[in-house]
Amino acid sequence: SQTIHQWPATLVQPVGSPLSLECTVEGTSNPNLYWYRQAAGRGLQLLFYSVGIGQISSEVPQNLSASRPQDRQFILSSKKLLLSDSGFYLCAWSVVGPGELFFGEGSRLTVL
Amino acid sequence: EDKVVQSPLSLVVHEGDTVTLNCSYEVTNFRSLLWYKQEKKAPTFLFMLTSSGIEKKSGRLSSILDKKELFSILNITATQTGDSAIYLCVLVFLNAGNMLTFGGGTRLMVKP
Image 1 (tube, one colour):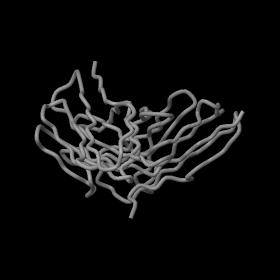
Image 2 (cartoon, chains in turn yellow, orange):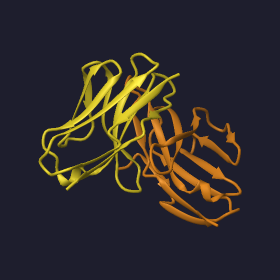
Image 3 (cartoon, helix red, strand yellow):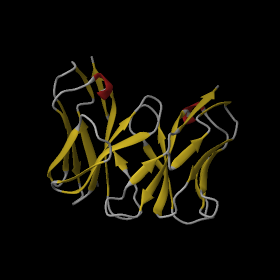
């Protein structure tokens, strides 16, 4: 069966520090991978998606970047965090088709 | 401008009430419409709707899609406090990346 792992679950970082959130998927090949950010109590905003290794599409210009060094690994990064980067980040995967989306457990980032 | 609009934004009911959550959209070129329930962390999948007029049902929850009028509803009967959550409506688009657009969510609170 397929599983998705996302870490760390909670992160507190000072402004200007770097960020790395990691997501890995098991049990499937060539998944579509996504990073979402969620504002408190609201819907999800798509940040990046990837249809294959090294293929990253950005939906929102910002302080963050994403990379897909391996088929089932997706990394969200920042060189210098801003206060506005605080939020709940979700990694997700899907296969081509009707589009059911499977989410990781999420990472809560607080930038101080 | 938002392509997927959910209403109401928030809702407070008492246990035993029936609620109807709405999701309206503006586009027609999508694969499917998904409903998710989000409590404290990652959203959990509820329904996938691809055909108009066919009701999907799971216990006290049901959902239907109307492609002519461009909306979907999620019904919850005999609500329980455990139904308290944010309910997310998502459109899955017809492209290689399975682009998804989330609605803003409806926050449901069920009081005892």
